[in-house]
Length: 77
Image 1 (tube, rainbow, N blue to C red):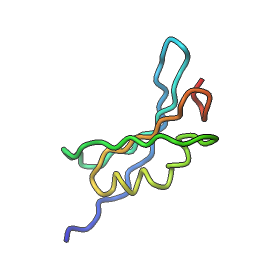
Image 2 (cartoon, rainbow, N blue to C red; image 1 turned 90 degrees about the vertical axis):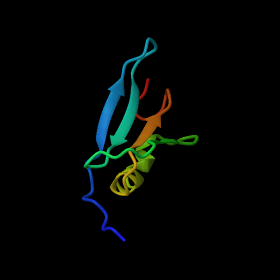
Image 3 (spheres, one colour; image 1 turned 90 degrees about the horizontal axis):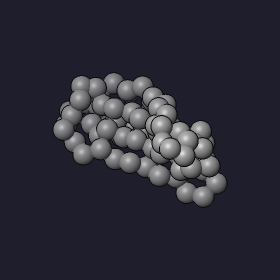
Image 4 (cartoon, helix red, strand yellow; image 1 turned 135 degrees about the vertical axis):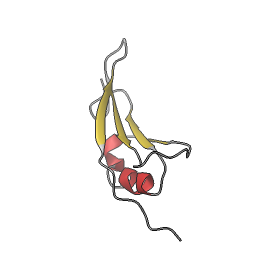
């Protein structure tokens, strides 16, 4: 079994939309892989930040990982 890669950094991105920005957290494996990306979407009364601990672990296993804050949650408008 191969050892896990180094833990990649968690990035906070803002995606512009006509209705206001959406918060997107991203954690990408290094070196990049061809694995399918995973998108995490929070439940009621949460935001993308609830996945802060999970995203680096998923990326460390080789999967690009993203978490979206829906409108009105986290840093999304």
